[in-house]
Structures are given as structure tokens and as C-alpha cells.
Length: 110
Length: 115
Image 1 (tube, each protein chain N blue to C red):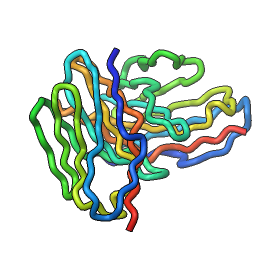
Image 2: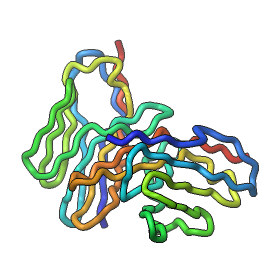
Image 3: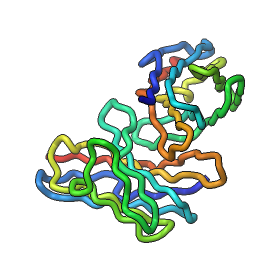
Image 4: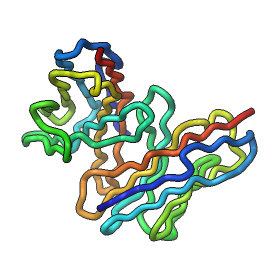
């Protein structure tokens, strides 16, 4: 069964303190791995998609990486506005649906 | 990316009633999806709605409880029928991007409370 596990569940950082969020997955052939950001009361906002091991994507203070078993979302020198829940999702080959992990709630203190 | 509008944004309903949620997209899309997000939880797919065919429901979700319409390539509705407090949740519409990238874009969601 395809599965996505995210850790930690919650992470509190000081402004400027870099860290990484983990997304471990098992899927019968990976079509794509997706990272979303979700703010309270809003729908998920697309950040990145990764398709093959070794691939990396960057956007401002965020960098996503992918291996055959997991993905990391690295956040460098975060700011309070980076506080949100970060969701990881995978899509299997031949499938139209994507499966979401439970998310990591990130809180950045000024 | 597509602009997705959901209505209503929130509602409070009585037990036993039904609510229809609308999802409007600013461009034609082949695939639309409906998700449920229970408080503090992640997203669970309810069904996939393709224009011109019956919706495909995920395990644990049935058409009698969550009927879906997809009359054209820019619009879909999800009805939550015979509601109970356990249906209190956020319901989200998403659309799939065409062209092979398979990215899904989401509406802001409908926050439903059932008393």
C-alpha cells in the first residue's frame, strides 16, 4: 500500500535557525512527489514537485530534495512568515490521485 | 496555475440536512478532485470527478452520502447528505494540471460545522 510519513509532527524554530522536514514514502513506482504549504483556514499552496532521485528544487528560503525513499524540505534562515503546515504527497505511476502525509506544523519565533 | 473558487466558504448546518458545495475553475480542466480535511488532520481523497462520467469514489466514501456532479469542464459540486456532527470538516476542491506535470491546485475550502 502506498504510504507517506512526515516527521516531525511539529517543529518550533527561532528566526534564522535552519532545519529540515522529512517525508518518507513507499510507493509502487514514483510518478511525482509534491510539497505544499497550508496556512490556517486556507487550501494547500503548491511549492515543488520532484520526479526522480537526486532532483532538487529551490524557492526563496526553501529547498526540496529527493532520494528513492524520502524527501527533505530544507528551510534556511527562516522568518516568522514561513510559519505554516507543510504537506508532502506522492503520486504513483499510472495513478491520478495523490496521497498526502499528515504534515509538519512549523512555527518560527521572532 | 488555475484560479479555483469554492462556495460557500463556511456554513453551520443542522443534523439531517444536506449541503451542496460548489467549485468553479477559471479554465477548462479534465480532472477535479474532492478532499476532506478533518480538524488537525491531513487531506483524504473523497472522489475524482471527470466530466462526462460517473465520479470515482475512494474506499469509505459512497455516492449516496457524497453525490458529485460535473456538468462541464469548469464546474463541479459535492453534496454532503444527511449530515451528522462527524461530517464537520473542511471540504476542498482541487484540479489537476494538464500537460504531464500532474500538479494539483486547491481551492480555499469550505469549513462545515454540523450541530
